[in-house]
Length: 157
Image (cartoon, rainbow, N blue to C red; front, side, top):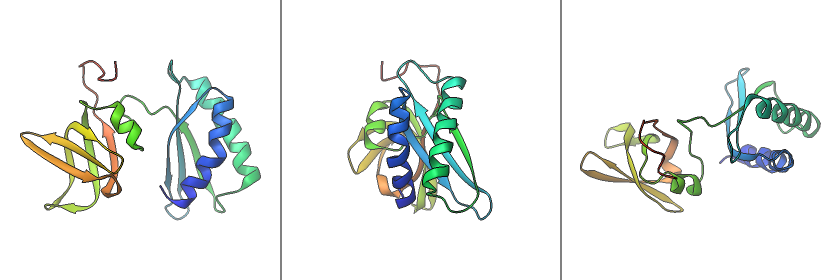
């Protein structure tokens, strides 16, 4: 997580907690004049459009006052959805046994994209089963990881 994302996390977590919501993750995509700040929220019984709208209003006001982003940006507040991105070791552990798609920051064996079933998730590394091969990746090497939706039961239940 970048320093800017950490700063934003420290600002928005108390606001979300006051609304009965949890911060699932932050994506800060700075692309010149088209900067996007996407904040994913979660709650036990699921997030609805009203949760997103209220969180967006509260976070927008806070960010206007605190001004952690000096350039123009677009704020999006969203549920992580069924093919949710995974941000933390604890989130990976919630999805042991689930299919994942991974994109690495740099090539590994000539590729950046991998998919497989999540076998293990430690504080610094995860392992997936791809076919009959067990592959391990340091969390810092993963650019993006998301759960792949299937009709099979959620491994968390």
